[in-house]
Length: 569
Image (tube, rainbow, N blue to C red; front, side, top):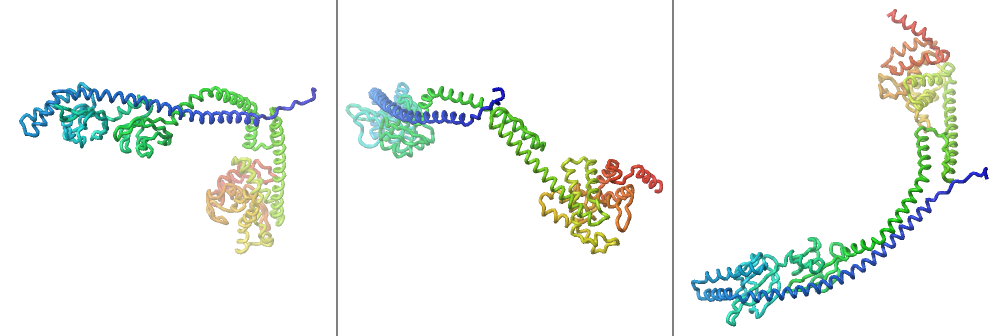
């Protein structure tokens, strides 16, 4: 039907959020399940890898040690070395002269053998187990005279680990025999250092560590994790376990034990799980990407559909608030019933507020005018004084380029400036003769009385400075506080000038009113002492703009009077 108005669609924000959250929760649940399953599988895989590494390392080490024993056994058959060692021992017992030559021969032979073998350390021990000579890159760890073992002499080759000043060494020991007698032994030492740990890691395909007496001597682990590993109780019990190191779960396998040394292979379960999780989540990546893309497209469409009218309304409301144009109506967006209903409700509300504000403004303005009229009615000689002072003050303010809000404050404050005279008895206000000092003090109290009245009415607070301080003077001889200069508010200085001008030009019971130009002359004479110069200048400029019937001001007469005064002076 042509007369039917098409209703705009409803908002779909809740539906979009629900859909987006559903996708996110599904992805989160899948991620959690995959992470748990992958962690379990990563642990099993790490255990299988370490078991295989343990077997591989054990076989490789067994073969390596066999080769070392064969090498050492071959080296131990060196006739020159054995002859020199036997001569050295014999000469040492009898104090022979060739002892030096014999030990020199031992050292030379050891160096030649070490150079050909390429071992970390090649050491010759005497029958008591003390070092006679050593050679190789780590020969310094086996200083001559150092006792490497005690007890009975070995009857065959041995594989053990010894601690030296240069660190731990894995040693293959073979006896040196001559004529069925053991004259010493030959040791081939391999340093258990970082290089050895790296070789272990390459063979085991896992991190490695060599632990002796709860101390990690060589490892491919970080320093912090290695220190924590050495302090762990489950390292020394010989069983494989999962332990916590550096906040991560580590799977530990004892791949070998030689003497006091324990050879460990380690794998981080968390790291393996992270790698496996990353690999498994690659399959979910496309699902997540597509889901996020669809959610982003839906969010973008919804944002463009909804935020444009909302932003437009927001801009209009901000402009309305900054410019205080509360009667401006918001247009309907036409995009949704909710936004249109919001605009209509907002317009209705703002119109109600504007009407209420106008009524309130009119009510308290009427109350202020009624108070001023009631005050002026007490003395027929001052009737209309507050209205005239208000009009003069506003014109002075316009010349001084005050804002509309400041002019409103000035207008109402001037209407109320003498409200405190309510507290002054009629016989004093209307007294035709001179006032006594006590009566004059009562008159001087009216600014304080007026301020006390205004303080009890919150919405009259902006006019309080005018009422309380409109009798202060620039020279500090005013009342009630004796303020001076710029300490007196500008509005109070303006009202003081307007009040004085009207008082001079108005008739009183005890005197007749003076001419406007005479009043201006009097005000200008007292500029800087009794009156503010800027306010007096503004009054002079404002008077010609006012109706002569309202002010009695005649510009021509004023100029003539000024000319006469200059000639007389």
